[in-house]
Image (cartoon, one colour):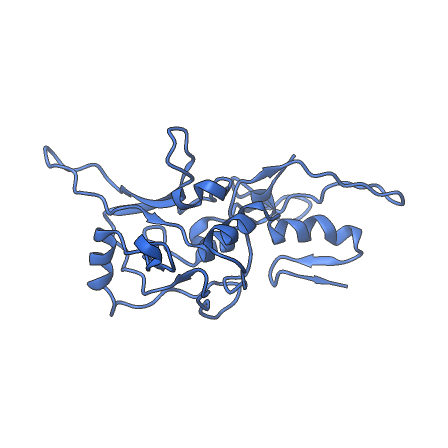
Length: 244
């Protein structure tokens, strides 16, 4: 049983992995990351802290997600509208900067015709911190941006994986809590990045098919760690390549 977060995936996805070989001892590679960063020891540096969603997406801990228009998601097949609060936040923040490029690509992600069209991201609001909720059930996993996501699973619940805002501090005195921004659905691009796919991965099919592909896939970063020693290659976490 391996936890993807132990290998630099911003997601605590646990999976049973079978590794077998007729010519060598088959065993999983040593983990590179841990829930808590480890100090340097006698045998070298300790493991790095788990990668957070904010790190992977290039966001700050209080940055709100990008409201999007989803192709064919609205009534009659038209574009799906923003949630009202998100639309308002977007319309008042278009000139405050654009989305940070994904750190692994260094380029702006390109829109997918079958997916979402990215827009400017509203400026961070220190009153709210954002978390990812896996579905709308009572036992749904909710994780803050400062940590890795829970297991991403989609299919018929693809539209229920949402970013939700939570107050960073309780209201002072008898003051009423301000109304929270409405939840914002995760985009396929964001979900793909949290699976360690490139931000511009050319997914195919309609939105449901794309989310199914993302949710069912083995995170590429985990796969590279697993396969590298058995292919006689060295995996470089810095540039995410397999070298001979």
